[in-house]
Amino acid sequence: MPFHEKIEHALEKLMYGSRWILAPIYAGLSLALLAIFVKFFQEMIHFLPHIFEIAESDLVLTLLSLIDLTLVASLIVIVMFSGYENFVSQLDIGEATEKLEWLGTHDYGSLKMKVASSIVAISSIHLLKVFMNINATPNDKLMWYVIIHLTFVISALFMGYLEKSPNIDYALIVIRYSRLSFVRGSGGDYSRVLAE
Image: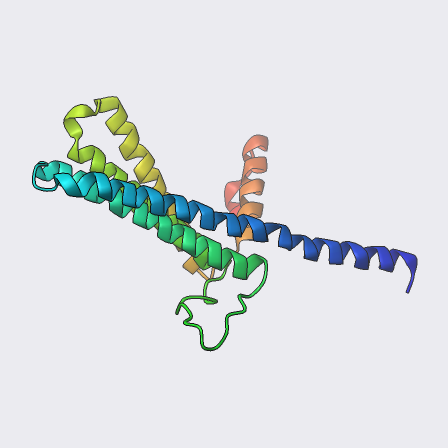
């Protein structure tokens, strides 16, 4: 084997092996899950003794906070398992062990969509919490909450559209956009570029 092929082979093995650097990061997400577990039950311990005293709106706000924590924890589990399986290695779970139904079915595209939809759901809950306590929120902050939430929603919808559209050639979009920018700068004909 020639020397340059040996170097190429060694570099490829090094790059392929470097995916294991991600493994401790995904394992670290389980510590984040533990932190959410502690925070969830801390909220419950503060909340339950006063359940008969608190107002209905405060009850709803507390429940929304608990739902918010649950959604974030679920998102961590999805990212932890799907990310590990997609980028590091397949999970080697014994046949007798209960396996999650969705495990091994999420590719990078569906993982992106799960994350985007989870972010929209979490943002919706935050926005609902703001609206439940609308008197304490200044109008300019309220406007920014809505704008940020709509940005998340539109981004998720656009990502879903791009993911589900088999006829869209992403590279072609980039090339055509680049040509349009060039033609616009030089005062040329747009229709000719779009037709190519």
